[in-house]
Length: 383
Image (tube, rainbow, N blue to C red; front, top):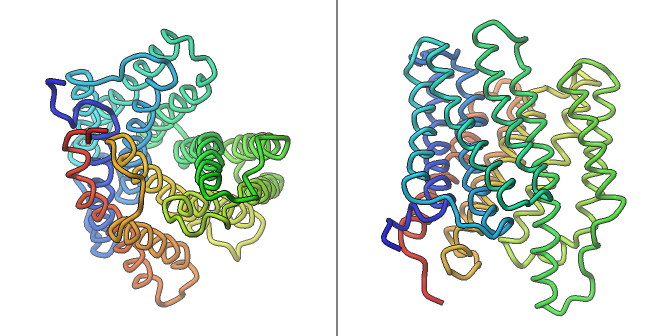
């Protein structure tokens, strides 16, 4: 109770700084891309962009989510106070190193301190709490941290280009499938029960298992052999299975609740991105950039904002209801994702569409910072 509210739970500082980082890093990237300038750090500009969106922004959101969920999973106290501040400092150290340290090896060491420490903290809680049910989530967080290291090794010329990003995105697909598959039907069911709806989400069953197993097989094949026709077919099939899985969760019945609807929209982006990724391998008519940004700007951007806007209210004692600010956040991220995916198909209008999409997407995160800073920095409301 004596520590500042922002250091009481992991979601508070990590959600806030993750959103600020995303909101500022995209305009910087567009300036670099448009002007041909370069950053002082160890990466080429395009690699810095990918690195910071995955291992800067997304890793911070994952950290905030898992550090907040683990006390519920294990019944133990949350990581807070000085240990949380130290973890946050390591994340910031990584961002500074990747932007300003020109030497690849020291930058790698500085950047990997955060995922290594986070993985240790998560596994310690899982083992101490004997919460083996969530060991797969801890394992995927570890894989994500390993992908960060692989991306640095690529920069050192020790690993084939693109491997680290594929490992990271494969992990993201499975995380969304696992965690989204828990929270989306659960939140939907709870709301529909209150509305006395007759149709409720169907329970976890063979269709859910098939989608997860197909995704695991498809992304593993994609990591190892992204050029194969069988890889494209597997990814497209997994995307269709996720679409069927989503259809079982009664999303249309919750259209009047924006904070519920946006979760279904985010999962729909996951399905679409896998289909596009598969088609991109099978046909040159589908640009790889469109598929990758359907997964990153679409699925990752939408799902993370959906979770952050909801969890930040619920865990600070506030009503989980969308206001005009939150609706604007959802609209901005959706417009930004659509335009970013559409940009490769825009021909001579590629750059204007790219800029409009990037500005809209980053605006969603800056709106989050403005709307949620008082919530995340202030005390929990009394019941």
